[in-house]
Image (cartoon, rainbow, N blue to C red; front, side, top):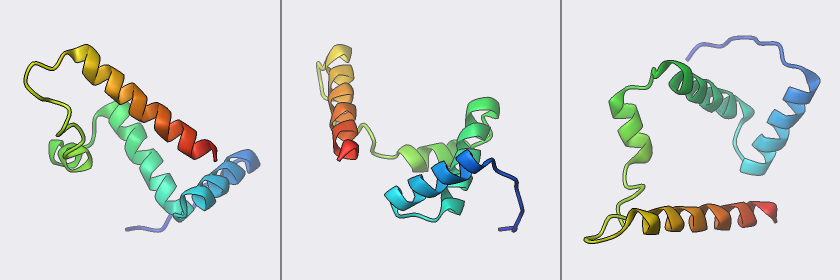
Length: 89
């Protein structure tokens, strides 16, 4: 890794520190994650191997025989809503 310096607005730094405190991770890790996300979203720079490692097993129990796509989507939405509720506390 290389050390760099960047300039952030006060509101960006506060949000970054708040999220780091909430997630109990260093804010530098959040910056690296944000850069990875931006690179993937705009340029697709993550390798196939990186993508597979990051998502491995994510849907392993979702694909059973004769399952309808609506069921998968509903299950994913229910999981997402549970996560949102947990994070509100």
